[in-house]
Length: 320
Length: 320
Image 1 (cartoon, each protein chain N blue to C red):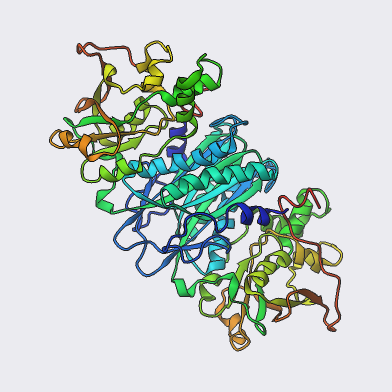
Image 2 (image 1 turned 180 degrees about the horizontal axis):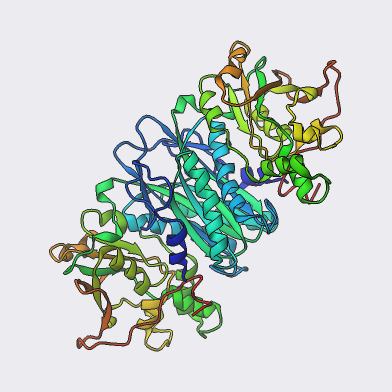
């Protein structure tokens, strides 16, 4: 079997077929017909074996996650997903592996109406680079730079689950049964908050997805907006599974660990009461934006608490 | 230095700034404003250390080539380049290496008016995945499927130079001086035939870029078009440097080796006389399309000659 057979058999012509793709996989380039009056939100993220996932990850999980982390970036822009490309590097042409990888990828793609429009399969160390594009009117996009003093800070879903899942996978946390399964599923099968992102158009002043850890990712909003924030440590939304894990001070994990792919966003005080009703998922107010720069943590009594450790950083972690 | 500093310092805000990029690098996704009435030609290609280039490749050459091979795909569609994203994996945060890589990338990007709109830098084995997008009216795109019996087959520039350059680099061909430098430059600094691709709109019936070898790449046109071809071995355009290399039967190298990134295209017989005047580069007629499937090689006297070896294939080569 050669490279071209590989691509054709597992990827070409499969999954969603969109009317805005006049030419899909199989030529020198795909041809895409963008809708009038919208911008294309465009993002790329790469997952490497040994860095972003364990080499023995179930291939269906990897196919899911490689697409999910990119769709999460579209959610954070308030964009509607449309097209994806996939650059897959693998050490050998393992058909069972490829079939399962493709199953995981396409199941998620179909759920959000995404068509795979281009691909590249090469022999090399296992890695997956996915680029996705979605549609959003330019003035409705959720940028990082729109947070203002007095805005409320929110987060969708729960935080810290994927971090606890990673600790289980790496043997640093001894846990089994349903709580362990739930935490591992959050690590391996994150759900991009596409519906929430769309609902936040016109409502949120700024948004980002939590991939590197809440403290670090909110930090990007603060830097881009030229503001600071006060977060309430006790307000961070924790899942039953995380609370059952026995981890001490779980809010610190929830504040620092990445890979949850929830949305963190800000909304003006007058819009805040409508946030919960607008979203299709749980959402929690966790603090507010300040004119004073920096991120500060308080407890329920308003007392300053020790900040959580810094988030995940691929290059900094060896040097820290 | 962390991942974000890396990206910012070497890539963000650098190079061409296009009016159709309302939001570039620095948010969850870039925002791109496509022009009305055109489709987006979209392609992705990944280069891996040890597979597509030697680990000690000068980083400026790698930056150039990673973009060039993708622009070549746009050229083969007749598209005008616009936007690129870059997913770069590297084993360590080497500033000198990154600076030179970025120099090579941006020099070529500026030459063709391409803006880098998204990026991802991760620690891992050295690899570069680039996606590019360009504009082409849907009915003007050069597809692989339009070749018809009686069409003439053309190729731009010269073939086989990059293959000879690779032989020099790998120590399989002993050559030095200006011819060797010329052949190595063709391997490391290919020039995408953007101008030729644009000029071929409305003129060519089918096109492809020669990345895996003429025989294999033309084979894709033949398969997509449901036709065959007769090529004239002695007509293949060979550079002075290749002719000076002492390689025996150089046409076989020119027919089978990849990495030249010339365009191979077909044009109806009545359009063929105008091809040379329309293009901004050398172009050579090398054969014609037949109703009978398959690719056959003839010499100047019309006699059948032994076909060249099969082109480069990442997965097949170990199994051949």
